[in-house]
Length: 279
Length: 312
Ligand SMILES: Nc1ncnc2c1ncn2[C@@H]1O[C@H](COP(=O)(O)OP(=O)(O)OP(=O)(O)O)[C@@H](O)[C@H]1O
Ligand SMILES: [Mg+2]
Image (cartoon, chains in turn red, brown):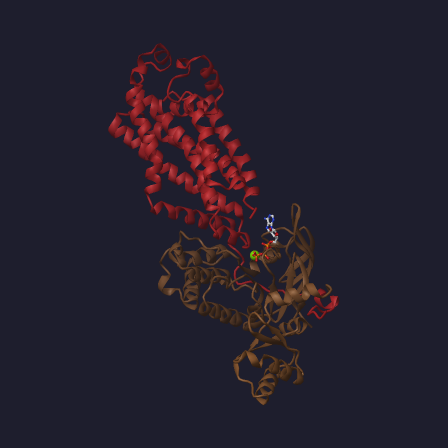
């Protein structure tokens, strides 16, 4: 059969070096461009408002329904003279931060359906920059949400934490949420399904939220729940955030929370970076 | 001396049990177009994805623009453009934003990126829609934006995976012209298609894939010669003349057969003059003709012929 294939010698000849017009952007530029791409979503504030709805409701309802909790011996023993809203807000900041991590995974799963990601795979672009861009966008979005929550609590519900303490609690919530988000980002690169991601997120996060020291002091929880809450990493995070906001910060829960979040981030990054290369 | 921009040596790609590409070898000289022809599932997309570094090879080796797709993937990626089978554009961004995004990632400054974006929007007739979200584009507009995105970095090698599927005839011809201009500028193109006429029009060389293997390759003319080329199809006005027409054509040196159902007489055309020969023969026999056409062989004819003939 006739073919256009020439002799082997010919195609083994060295090729003249040919230089492309552009060499590919530096990694940091890639991250900046990818973050900018994700941030365009903020032009549509509906997503943020939707995501804020639930924590706002919880903040409002819990602050009224559980107000009498401050009368219980367990509460008075651990938090003497603390208003319930001052006890509650740092916890809501933390749980909202961790819930945002779950949304992060759903957001990435959705983005992975976007055709442009397939283009990136054939370009001189690190897929890690897609992940980091996504993650930075989530931190920005989360920072806006947590700030709005804190302001609403102060203006409407009479929250009176110290400013620096509250800002520190927000920062810690952002860091913990960021760490946990990498687990969900990794999961998203392997599962690639928005609905499944949301299910997994709900199932993982809701029990952790309630079986923790978020809404009731540890000693106020019934027996078995207290055992779960004591080992629940979210309890450390909540205690650490609460310590910062109330000005009673202790080092141990803070280090625990930050350490676990950092470990989550590293593990998540490794798996996410591998998972996202698959077309 | 020929300089090859795509060199594929015995490349295979398997997905678990499925062998999508099976020992394919292929060489594309600089500044030429090679058409990869094949039915659904033949392995066209898989081969394109392997060559554009999207998928790792299972065995064999391949070089694109002189660089190994496995060991030097980064170098390859700087020099190629890929227009995949499914539009790879960000529908949440505008056309302009899409192009700027890609240019920035390739390393262009903001100003260069915007200039290049405007340039390509102009070439692809998308200037009016430049600041609309790509989500609102028609299929053809998305396809053009997709192609524009692949051309931003002035790639030396372009992969086009079924670029005209789903385009109307005018858009199709428009795209062909774009490809021809690129090739005139020295770009090397690997194009997959299911249409023989598209490969015929654009490709200097055609490789036919079937179940992951190369079953034929050569120029369009060579392939057609192999397939038995085109057919002269005749419909006589009066069915009573059918026998007479068969006779006249046979006497003229053709090999006509009669398809009762479609009321058509067809004969393989081996020489370019065969149509004229048929006209003269029928005219001389005073047969009134209702329809007379020279039909191109289709991809099906190529396959039928190749399956009939012992595999080369
Ligand atoms: N990711 C994958 N996992 C498993 N099998 C795959 C995968 N991708 C492709 N295949 C299989 O490999 C074979 C070749 O597929 P490919 O998409 O390359 O064909 P194609 O020639 O591009 O077809 P089409 O004309 O439909 O686009 C098919 O049998 C397909 O099912
Ligand atoms: Mg295909």
